[in-house]
Image (cartoon, rainbow, N blue to C red):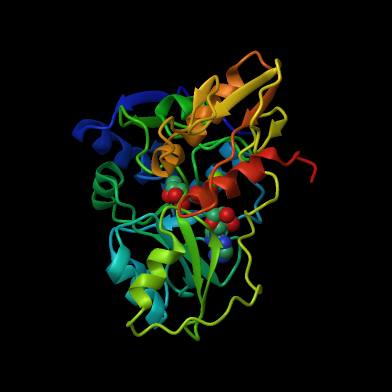
Length: 322
Ligand code: TXA
Ligand code: MG
């Protein structure tokens, strides 16, 4: 049962945030804006609250959640941060950077939040609303993207309502689209300080390498051992066929343009990759809602944040049974 809640959308102001904190304390679900996408938050120390996230999203229980923390001190209460993770947190947080690190056994996190793994994904978000909410709560917040499992991620309160209305108590509306528009970069950092990128995102590996150039961090080559269980081949699906690298439009295509390739909407008319990242999910939502039976997407350069955009586009274009 996913429940039947009278989902309310309220402004993410002081009153809204205080109300959200009360709902969360009582084990409820609140959708919250972050700098990446809207998150579906619940207290990470409660079996019942976290179970409700899986239920509301129809999310497979083997797919663990990201735990959001106020600061690196709160992260240290939940996990044994290997030296590399400590350095990265210091350099980047608050940021769209999630660190998968060894969890502390006695940290009080419910096992469901990590799907029984002995690691935990931690992120300190760079958004005033999510930060205010974390400051108002004495517990950390589990928060996956606020969409039903497999659907396109939400970058506005209206996107959240589309798939979660009736399943959660509250949506905090920031009144503007999420700034980055793509989910956080995920890095797994092992006890031996080697690390591996599990999901490309707004903090790109080039930026990490630039910081390491003279730094203390010694990265081992990727081992391929760890995988983000949620990185399924098909994801972010708009519910109709998606054709990538399209330079010509067929009459039944909803065309998503980029740069010189124009369309029914565009990721960025001036070919700006940050703008394209911020607009990607809004364009996919528009394509999903249009009467056209297919979606076509113009080529997007595979560099910088374009790597994360193409990662999401490939998953959106993969049929669900693969
Ligand atoms: O930007 C974001 O990260 C957003 C906002 C709300 O913070 N959250 C988000 O959560 O994208 P979600 O649940 O949609 O994606 C979490 C990803 C999944 O691919 C999951 O498998 C992976 O993180 N993950 C979580 N815990 C993990 C762990 N212990 N080991 C490996 N992967 C993990
Ligand atoms: Mg997601």
